[in-house]
Figure (cartoon, rainbow, N blue to C red):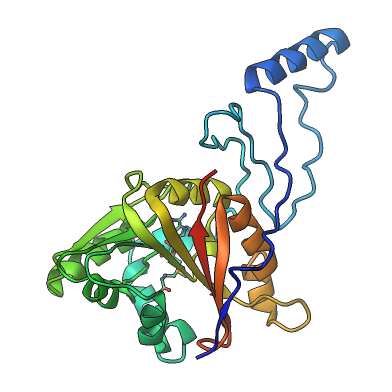
Length: 279
Ligand SMILES: C[S@@+](CC[C@H](N)C(=O)[O-])C[C@H]1O[C@@H](n2cnc3c(N)ncnc32)[C@H](O)[C@@H]1O
C-alpha cells in the first residue's frame, strides 16, 4: 500500500476576492443608472466567459468567522436532471451497481481506505442508489451513525427502503438542497463524496455546508474521475467540468488541507483526503 502523505506539502492559498457589501454595491449601481439614464445596470450584457472553476466567494462580513457565500453561479446546470426523473433509482441501480464500474468493483477497498471505526458519524454525500449504504453503516456499527444524503427525491426514497430492507438502524437518509448538505453543525467526523463532486452545481456553497457539518479535525474524502485533456475519453471531458487540480484548489480554498492521496486503489479515479481547518 503506498499511501502518500502530503501533510507537509506547502498549502496553496489564493486570495479571496473581497467585495463591498451588497447594499453598498447596489447603491453605486443605482447612482450610475440615474447618471447614465438607463445605460449599464439594467441591460444584461453578454454572458461572462464561463470557466470550469467556480469563482465568486463573497463574504459580506469578513469578521463573522463563517463565510456567507452568495451569487455563486451554477457551474453545471442540468447535470443532475436525469437523477430527478421518475424511475431514476431503479434504472441507475443497473448502471451504478455493475462490476465494470471501478467504484463498484473497488467498494470494499474504498470503505477500508476511509479508516472508519465504531461510533463514528459519517455522511455519504451523493449516496445515489446506495452502493456504500451497508458497508458504511456496518463500519461505524450500531453506536455510530450514517447520514445518507442525496438531492434526488427518487434516490432518497430508494435509500430509505433499502436501509429498512437491510435492517440498517443507524442510517438517516437526508434529502438535501443543491447548495447545502443540510446536516446539523458539527455533526459528523467524515464526509465521503464519491463520484459526486463533479455533480455539485454550487460547489463552494456545498463545501461551506460540509465545513460547517464537520467536527473540528473532521475529514472530507473525495473520489472522482481523472480528467486529462488529450487523454480522457471525450464523454468524460464533456461530463466532468474540471480535473483534480481545480477541484483540489476549490476544496483547499474552502477551509480544508490535503493530507492524503492514494494512487494504489483506483485507475480511473483519484482518492483525496482533506482535513477541516479552522477559518
Ligand atoms: C454519479 S452519482 C454517484 C452515486 C454514488 N456516490 C455512487 O458512487 O454510486 C451522483 C449522485 O450525486 C447526487 N448529487 C448531485 N449533486 C448533489 C449535491 N449537491 N448534494 C448531494 N447529492 C448530490 C446525485 O443525485 C447522484 O445520486
